[in-house]
Length: 157
Image (cartoon, rainbow, N blue to C red; front, side):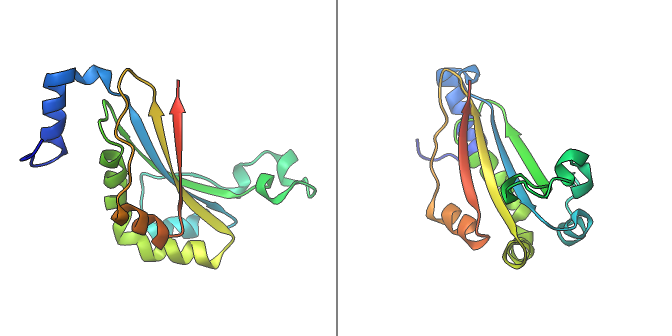
């Protein structure tokens, strides 16, 4: 299939051939979690569409329990999600999110490197008759590596 200008053209062709209702919805979420001040993170990143959960948003029973393992202790969570209905390739929503974050890579890397903080991407594919292409280019892997990010794939039934 040569000569396509962009993903929209490819999507149009697939719709004519297969019917787009056959392809699943895909969400891609970028998240940062750790022990940091959520307002400081917002000020650094300046992305208003993100969802946050601060240290004070955890139940008191968890906040007061000093015996919890570190991975279960209260932490700040920041996330930004995009969605693609009838998705033929996970790179379509992934690259939309990459484009939002591209200007912030140095800030994200600084946050992840300086604190007990992790970041990652979660790609959720909502099962359908057809599955999207699931692949990452070298550039995608370099992007993830630059910010020390992991990527998780999940298929929802």
